[in-house]
Image (cartoon, rainbow, N blue to C red):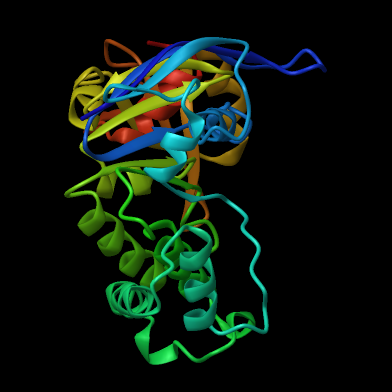
Amino acid sequence: MDLRIENLSKTYPNGVRALDNVTLTIPCGMYGLLGPNGAGKSTLMRTIATLQEPDSGQIHLGSLDVLREKEELRKRLGYLPQDFGVYPRVSAQDMLDHLALLKGVTNRQERGDLVESLLVRTNLHQVRKKALSGFSGGMRQRFGIAQALIGSPQLLIVDEPTAGLDPGERNRFYNLLAEIGENVIVILSTHIVQDVMELCTNMAIIHEGRVLFAGAPDDAVGTLGGKIWQKFVAKTELKDLDSRFRIISTKLIAGRPLVHVYRAESPGDGFAPVQADLEDVFFSRIAGLQ
């Protein structure tokens, strides 16, 4: 089963074109949707989740027409939005039990077994009696995944899930998502390149509502072979370099700017070739250099 998005467009009343003829085929497994803030990622996620209507286009999950059969899609969907609200004084166990009941698990024993298994799977069993208000950021995200997994969804959407997590919490969350992605379609919407690099076998880059690349991360990186050059420079040199070269990124390392330049041939001037990575792909695509 795959998710097929065809010619999807959405323009808001203020004139912002959030989706511009988006076409993607998303297979089973981890799929990264990478783009800067405001690129249209959340609009696409909400549209797939049937929370808003597109102006035009189609979405199919297998043989299911998502936009025409919204209730059927919702039965097969798990959704973790960027911001989700919970009753802060309720325990994780009681909240999951309540959500499972709302999702139609009416048998008390079945519901108890389901909640127990989800708490274990998301490594929250030891804190199951703790109020959600006392959860760390990573624990809240793992709880969010637990509620999204109620009903054994065929499609799981997670929107900016690792923003604000410390490295340890992020790694635990990575492991959980990778495990889930072995059996279902998991769409990971993020602006964090590392998330896609470490988790996803397929991806798309979206910017200003348009798809700039769709395919495997390794294929994307391969398009930049021999075209990325780097050099440590003084801050006072940046303006001059920017006027002479296509600088795609600049980051400080030990207080010194490290510049990456996109160029088919050596720019000379002390630049050295460097192995391209997904961050270079991201910045070069956003800059319109590919």
